[in-house]
Image (tube, rainbow, N blue to C red; front, side, top):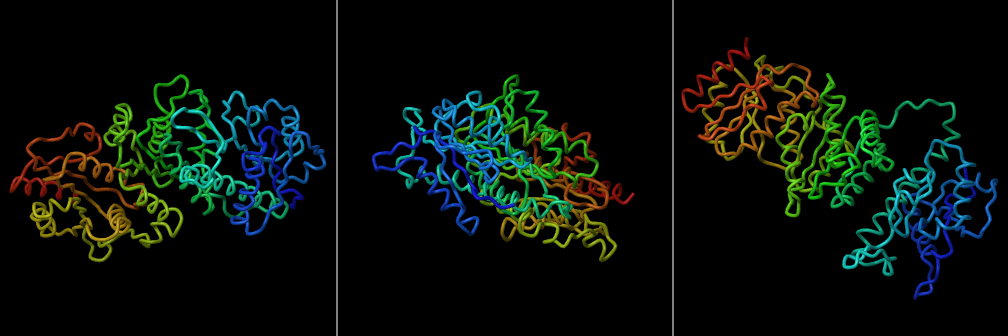
Amino acid sequence: MTFKIDILIVYADADNQPNDHGKGWVNEFKRFLELMLIQVLGEKPNVLLKSEHDSVTASDMKEVGTLVPIMSPAFIESGECLDTLEEFYKTVNTEQQRVFKVIKKPLTIEEQPTKLRDLIGFNLYNINLDSGEATDYEDFFTLEAEQDFWMKMVDLAYDIHECLILVKQKDSRAGIKPIFSRRSIYLAETGHDLTIQRNIIKRELQRHGYKVLPDRNLPLNITKLKSEIKREIEESSLSIHLIGSSYGEIPEGSDRSIVDIQNQLAAEKSATLKDKSEFSRLIWISPRLQNASEKQLAFIESIKRDLSSTEGAEILQTPLEDFKNIVREELIEVGIDKKLNRRESGKAGQNGKANVYVLYDKTDEKEVAPIKKFIEDSGYNVLIPSFKGELLNLRQHHIANLRDFDAAIIFQSNVNDQWVRMKLLDLLKAPGFGRRKPIQGKAVISTKDKKMDWSPYKNHSIMIIDSIGKDALNDVKIFLEDVKA
């Protein structure tokens, strides 16, 4: 399907008045959008401006690919603008979303036309940090504009680009059932401090063919909100959660934020699945939480400690760039299964011996040495962590071990209890990394005088060895005998 007009920009005259430099805001917007689209489409699109007093007929609307309304109080007050919007929806009866709302002046959801309320908007106004007043960008080339205005223009250009490709290919696809369906990923809504970072990850996922949810504004009513999140998580094979300093918006009828609720509902889906490889979760926690509220810090602590909220999840508290590299490695480039050649049996397939994965930190390398030697002397292969190389390589080695081990022992001497909890979570989520054999045993050896609270793990068949020296080796012997049995 081809269009005479790829993009129709509809606006109120008041939003295109000449500024001090003699240029109208909408004219500048059109120029910038064309430049962006030339980059992503590889050709210049046909973009037409329509002010509130220009006439466009129903037959003209059939020739329009996408509609971009410039939303403002002046637009809402213009009957002609609203009529154009209504005419487009009436003429273009399609499941494909072809309207992209640009918000020039702040509007509440209730002030916006009903058909546009669910659509994610592109806010292109500037907020004065001192007064809180919303103003137009007068200089589009400041650092502030680069981080806000231009990032949203890039997002808009890519969304229009994808829409035009899908709509133009619609006729050629008619009657043909696609061989592959697009994989959906739930990229959870974040607090305001991580909006830009979320958009960067979203855009990269979309550019590589993934459908990113949610693709509409989430409802603010708690009942509708939960229903919508559950539906979209059910459609997804992965959820990604970015946790920063902001607790996030709290919906009507709830005392928990949307960020918190999304994590809870994703965990509930994981808990119901027998095959953990059907749905996985990545949770990134910002290493910098200086401005976090007490409520947010409590939420983050619950993520780290509560097994129910981290069901099926991999938790990473690394620099954001490292996390984005991990997302890229797993989802975009070659995938970790292909990278590791899906090692299924590890060393056990080579010599018939069972694998015992001994998890320890580099600071405990000296203290754990007798344990490792004892296990090897007892006739087992010892899998150990890697401490040299890039983060991705270390993680790949760790996940390979999580796939291969028959039994695992976590060793604690100098490391803190939080480190132990994170490794215990790794063991509990190991089935989600593509294991094809059952776990024969899990144990923790702690030589610390002050023991951590083991009660959250009592229902997960984890043997706790609170001893040192010969007593520890004797308990390890008992553990290995249980594994063999």
